[in-house]
Figure 1 (tube, chains in turn blue, brown):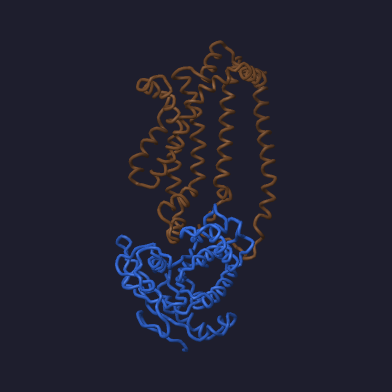
Figure 2 (cartoon, chains in turn orange, cyan):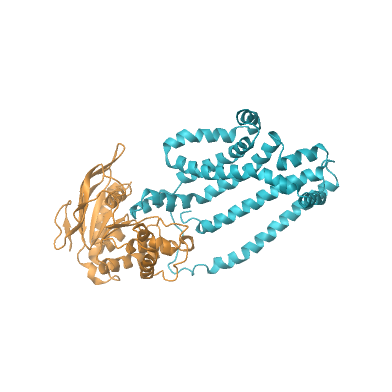
Length: 266
Length: 277
């Protein structure tokens, strides 16, 4: 099999430095242990997926990295700085979009900049640029309820891109959009990873999606959550978006992940 | 919450279908309003002509009495009197009610401290409490303002509090992720998200305030519009009595429409539905 497979965590990734690392994260909800002693490293400029069955704590881990939740013990470092809360170095894309229904697309996209104290005309210039980049030019004055689910998530994506954070945290961003839109999103995400020099952390429960978009896949197993393996697909990335899904390595990895997850799905 | 609707990336440009709908909406709703008023007044006129009771005047008689009251200035002096407790009471109830409501909604401690008071206030039979108020605060403006507040405030407080408590968690989380401070979250997320329910509470509270103002004038001292009602009833001048009652209802309806307009101007996006519905 033409892939490098590294067994549990904390192995230096060759040829790239680390943008985000989590160290011995443990998280309790009351008496329930959601994460146990979880250590992971996220290489700069790459997309790492957190993949696992539902209830495996992948969203919890993402929120801890985002500073929205506090770990019970352990710490998160972003660019060598310990995370104590949300910061300008990270931007979030939410599963349910989390748009403000009373605000236009323009105001929604500019929200992050507004919170950072960027003046109105400047933030609208920046927002307009990203609205165009995600393909929503002409919809600046529309309200979220006038948009389809896919378009709403493009607004969420533009909001995250416009604050120009180095790390993009995406919480199952495509799970609430339909299949065709999702495929288009996945292709767009690949070119985004390539063109923007950002680190992407991507939570998903779809094996195909994870293998399709990721440079590195961390497989999480539930109750309590821990990293069971890290997979780095290596060969099919350069073959072009149209060929990935029939590449033998792609198919092998999908199969292999399913066989290791199968027993955890009731 | 979750969106499963089939969607396409290239949707119709926004506003195209909705704008068309919106442009006919006001005229149609105006026609409907006039129609329902006509039906109501027609039924009133017929009921008055049968008559259902000798104490029930026709619509035309009542309107004639209303114009008489307006022409000789009685109506205006009466309202100068009635509006005092009404305006003071409603203003206090709205401002203080929303402030307390926000507080109660944000803090479990204040919820524990204040909610029971307002639930009791809302449930209490006010007419029975009025003698107590008179005993404590006399028959002046203070008592009347209190009656208006007791009527208006509970629903404003309770609605505001529950609206604040029901702010979608994901929106607050989003704001935090994008570095909003607690104050900004309150001003830019919680209050706009709660505004439809806050305004619903204001509408209910202010209509209750109108009832309170008239109740105060009937039960404490007959002044203003309450005096017209009491006096014309005592001399069996029913058209005048109904004219006074009609005028206060008209005023309440006009005021509620004004409130609706204010809401539309302040929070226009909110009338366009929720994303996460």
